[in-house]
Amino acid sequence: MDVLEPKNHPMYGKVSANAFESGALNPMYGKVPANGFQSGHVPANAMTINVYDIDNVLVHSFPSQVAAAEWLDVSRFTVQSYIKSGIPKGMET
Image 1 (cartoon, rainbow, N blue to C red):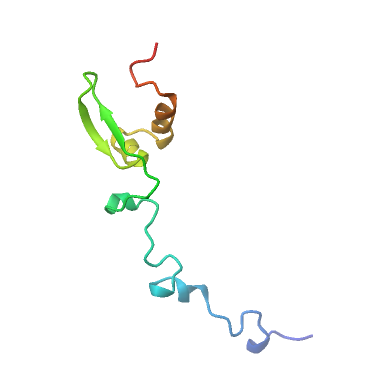
Image 2: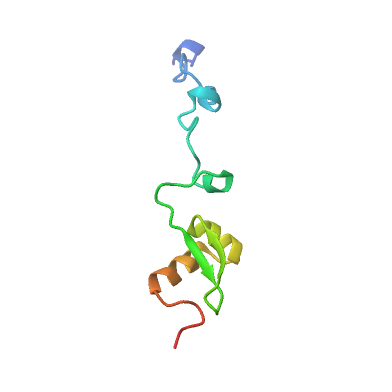
């Protein structure tokens, strides 16, 4: 029976995954993260969200649904649902 010596080991001579975790060798190096809007980067597909009060006065403007949801303390899905419904909150019949 063959004992796994270093040269017979399946990982012998291979580079560990840790070698690619930082710096320019990382495949995500220099790319903007999904929540990059928090650091000033706005994704190309982001939708500007405006929040108005009952008198139709602009209260706040947000670069994305996620930012609006965080400020309103609701889920992104809730913000998305109101946008898709086309009915402003408080105006339902």
